[in-house]
Length: 121
Ligand SMILES: [Zn+2]
Ligand SMILES: [Zn+2]
Image (cartoon, protein in one colour):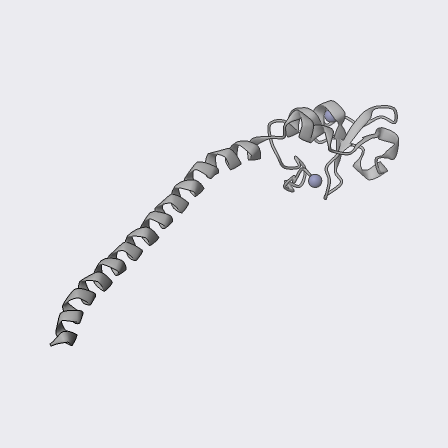
């Protein structure tokens, strides 16, 4: 008798708790999903190009330091002369005129020659 009374009191509680746990899980899942959706446009914007400060962090050299076979700037198709400032894409080490590189990299975040992705530090 006591056991059946206990069960009729206890079972609905368990059922309600279970529903509550599932509800909280779904809520958590939905909030997480939303966070990803909100984060996506921000990531896409940063993938379009580099900011001025990110460009400043890229290595800056002069034409003298560019390897002879890499002296042709792929942006303007001109040679990088010895005294001209140049920028090197970290990772693939492709070199471009400073201005050409900054113009390109402010709109795109990959190397115009080999399409290597830039990961500014
Ligand atoms: Zn150039
Ligand atoms: Zn490259």
